[in-house]
Image 1 (cartoon, rainbow, N blue to C red):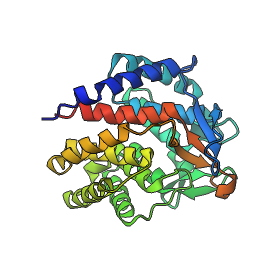
Image 2: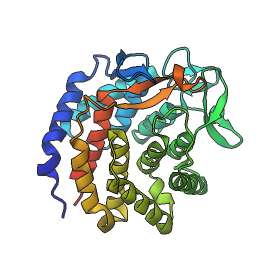
Image 3: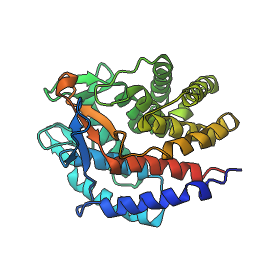
Length: 308
């Protein structure tokens, strides 16, 4: 039996308090940004509030603590007010001058659909060659492997075979290290996290999940000096414990979470995203911040504490 309450609950409570105290009056959360090649020049970022708020609500969606329930209600109200129709596309944008973002749109669509609030998004606006895509700031459609996995949230209700194909491709790309994304700072590990968060496991064969689990174990056995990479791996391992690979992962996961929570987040970066995608890295900016990072940590701790 897992008894992680005593080990992690104080941190769990502290993060709940932090998020409550840092939520904006309008229900959103602000992030932080910095130039790609100057991570010490961190600035508060209100430009990407919609995106940051989307990912925080995504991470908090399964948490039922009373204080977090209030945070989620405030986020829901903010995001429902932020949905926009631009031309033939309804969805959520990082800024008024940008087209709706596929990731934000499909994550919010799925969340509100589960609450019987139907947002009439048009998936066709993001499709090209039978694949979901993102737009660059120049208006071009571009393939992104993490976008493909996020599309599971849309297709899960009506296209099982498509979900199986998306999930099989995601596992193959993770294992080979051939992940393409212009928008995520650590794309291989981000793809893993999104695959697990979006229930890709249930579409995958036992043999594929065993291979993925062994890869995660090998990764966690190595020295990892980045909290976000460790976070992606730890959450994925916890999900595998709670589904199929319990005995293979449990001791490793507990030890890995211990190492993760020892990171001083005032020193490492907490940046998950980068952009614009259509410029080279010398002109890109990173996006993230402590509130977003803590939402990921809280999601991990909540999942770990509930394990029995």
